[in-house]
Amino acid sequence: MGLEFLDIFEKWANEYDLTVEGHDEQYKDVFLRYEEILQDVADRSIGCVMEFGVGTGNLTKKLLENNRKVIGIEPSPPMRELALEKLGDKVQIVDGDFLHFDEQLLPVDSMVSTYAFHHLTDQEKEEAIRNYGKLLQCGGKIVFADTMFETKDVFQETILQAKKKNFFDLAEDLEREYYTTIPVLQTIFENNGFDVTFTRFNHFVWIVEATKQ
Image 1 (tube, rainbow, N blue to C red):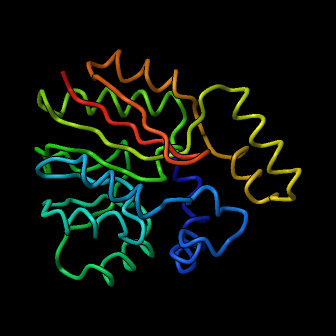
Image 2 (image 1 turned 90 degrees about the vertical axis):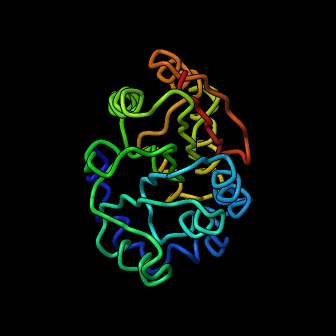
């Protein structure tokens, strides 16, 4: 479940915040409007929040500023350490991932994540959403911001354009991980009892807001 990419993120941990600030030209468009994206996810969340893929704690900080109670799930020890350095004792951050986490931490009202759901295959995404559908009460929300594409053709064209710009790290990333399309995600959410909307923030990133019916 995405743990095959853990080494990459542990090596990236110390430079992650510089990347999201736009210092890496290859990923500049991926993180365009980064602060707005995080704030929008925080604003759409409700009540007690479980955050998957805390990373260095950037979304967590905004959730706390919105007076949310946050339970953080993060599989990478270096990322957990950086987040706790940033946030102190204001939040509980525990080991786990989208599919494997301590359900005794529940109930929560929202499940949120940014820039992480693509670490799951489409089959794993469906497994995760099916589980969340069982765990959330009616009115509970999932708010995920992630890279996704309108169609497979748009996805392939994005990879081609990255290579034309000599953005080979970005192209390799797009080809290696499990980026999906909006129709696939819409079907998964609707089949598991969610009313779902998609809001675009840049060429790569959309916010998915799904409410349990």
